[in-house]
Image (cartoon, rainbow, N blue to C red):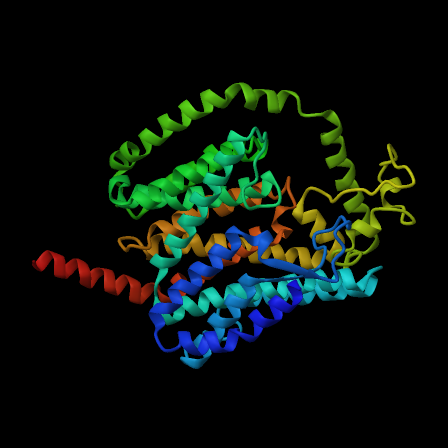
Length: 449
């Protein structure tokens, strides 16, 4: 029945695109619909060729309402002749390179259907990127996109509060795991921290609410890596904001930051017993497992440095009859029915499954956007969009750092959010001159009045 419903929904995409092309203001609701569908992602996606017991980064050929709305948005941009192109930026070209370098791993895979599941996911990811980039190209409406993202952060906070009221120790919001929630909300927290610092908290109630919601979500997950990284990411964002957009008004920024530092300290003090318990009672076996699985990944890279053992085939190659686990010294508790987990580092996972060239391309893709953020900090100074590169620099930097401990960036919700941020940065990078010119003209008009 669910496949029939999705087939009907897919047939409705072209008529929806035609309808939206009649009034570009309506496209705002489609962007909000994409983000709203993410907020209920598990209920709006189905898996073809599903294998729910498989311990890999993809368990089926996932089709989501998010992708259907993205297809509609791309069709609208084509009808309006505002489609930005298949590779509208350097970042998009790097992603294409990363995608192509993952394909040779099919030749060493045990199960090519599992390869297709992850490859399909990467294609759909790019579909969302193009949809957001096309929307911004048509409307220049970054504000509505930011409003939708703020709503997403607040919705997750409400879910975390609900879980807390029901005694859930580590809530995960709309995400599959608490670490996924922590990593995503880390980026959101920095983004809306920058908005509040630049615009002023009293002038931006939505940004204030979204920042508090995101920071509270991170703290309440009790994720050790995320909690330890929060001060670092917030400091990076603060320094970016202080460098340019506020024109050196360090005292004003410090005053805007102080209430939330105090609030954060009070909140941390209230949760301190649980946080200390979380650090103290972390089982030694968990640390040992991380090290052992990392060694397994190195063994796979040694065997297949150029093409890997097969994208999304980790869950097969880590178990018998393959001997990577035994070669890495992981021999305990490996009974006949035992199935090992995934290496808890996205970089080693990609290197093991797809080879060193694909890993290098992924790193280039990630860090390219840090460079874009730094570049935009100066170019967008004095414009309404100045907080975006500042906040995303702090958020992305720590997201990449946290990925040394988590494989979260192979989970689809987190990756969809990541490419939405990348699409925003690419739009701002392509249009910073006109944005700067418009900001100067508006300032001149205000001065004349």
